[in-house]
Image (tube, rainbow, N blue to C red):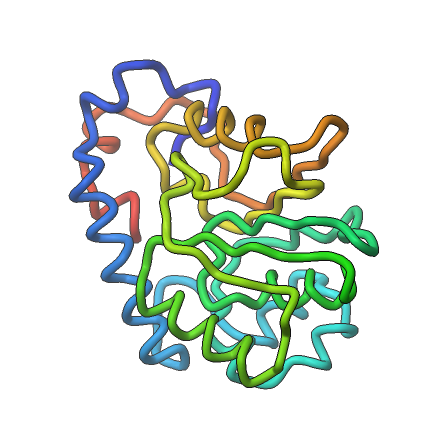
Length: 209
């Protein structure tokens, strides 16, 4: 995984974006269907707590909302969304971070989760209905081309997703587009401090493993 500083315009010539998306979708279809299976990453409530997620409102969520969580860190380490905020969750997966945000923003706030994997969207939407959360919704889309109105979001969150996108500058351009003036970005992700060889960038398996 490359840091933003190491990604030049040639990266899109090295990576087959459609193939990468297909591989990522297949991996997270597996997680949606069998969250307790063994993966190269950790999943679930205990994993979230080990990374410093607050016990509340995590304690309010049923297992169906937490068991497919596969984040790489805690985007809420420094701060949490405020009452009445509009929150956008990039790569929302099964929705755990979106549901936590829904508690923080309250009934006057709103949360939008965007993901490209149908099975994760279905799982998250089903959980939202079972929890009767009317202030959270999930939309199908790519985070490089967000299905969200410009200047409508107070807080953008993301956990372990931007590293999977080769066109990171496009992602951040979209974040800037949807944020209100003075809006906040809170992310947890994977970075490296050294250049990644072109041969590694071309290897789709290394992006997803």
